[in-house]
Length: 458
Image (cartoon, rainbow, N blue to C red; front, top):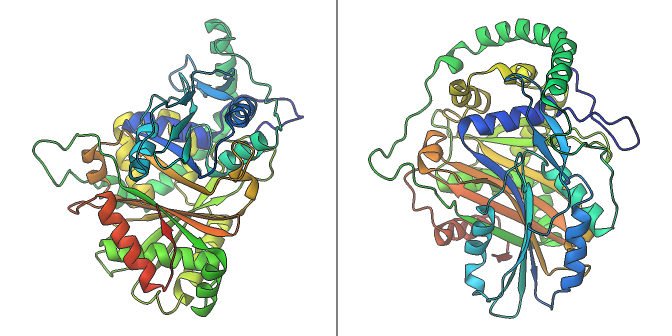
């Protein structure tokens, strides 16, 4: 499927939401889940509140300054609409909290009201800590921005770069006009929908077993399986030269060490494929063509599988697996992705099975592994001065225990090099395990020791 044209600054704006963003929005609504991005800054020195307020103001004039508006047609295309600047999504706590409660506070920020359709689609929170430090959280709905778009938005805000996306305000179309516009758009899309339907028949034959397999039931049963779960998280900060030295000594590079670390962490957590003990990584690969690309989620997914038993001594296998997986993703995208134009027509009850067939949650126990590479040090300048720590993570918010168990748990590892340090953020929930912050930190420390790495774990 050829990529859709996305509106760019300086061109005639098209506020139709791209298929990939529409698919994510409808899939999350259909399964009752929500996904967000969170950036976390820790300032050991006094924070410049005026500078932080300016940062908030600048964020309101870029890629985050939008929401999603539905079509009056049940199968119509979604539209981007402008989200005016507001102070309601900027809060400052008055009472300090203990440093040990940092991730408890971060989880609380993730679970504050957030909605890509009704707003706010993002929010900033500030929390003084009892040791004199200050924590800052930026939470963004994944429906309006992926990791790449979030980085662009933060850099624009730090540099006071404003983007006019040319989006209309909410409810700017009457219902009759919206119906006419969206029916006209549907006629435009019909040839592609017809081609996709023919392709869907082939995919259905190829994946008959996956699509017919029922979603896995909850393994716990009884009371409490619908409880909302706070999934344990931790961030690791390692000197960049130490990281590069270990990667080189193990016959790899920076990203293959990320992959090896994620694979070994999965091994230590018991998250390996039952058939052969291998680990499967799902690696988002940005296909954003330029900084002017205004798509929310502009990625393809690469898959890489390898034996995690040898990675602490040799990174050759994960290095090869990652390289080949990324090459396949760029040259031949997953056939399920080619079916995105049909997403508006998929019944809600079928989403769980479709997502499982796409990502192999029931069989591969995949590990999400993102690497942002070298990112500009300006990302640390939320208040105009360099924060001592910056971490980031993608989180499923308001997630139930039953949902996690249907997916057979999760493990997410995100990484980047920022201001001379390598940062790894880990989120983990494993069915039948202890699943506490302290137990996750213990497994991370064990994995670091196996790779002869030292660093700070928050």
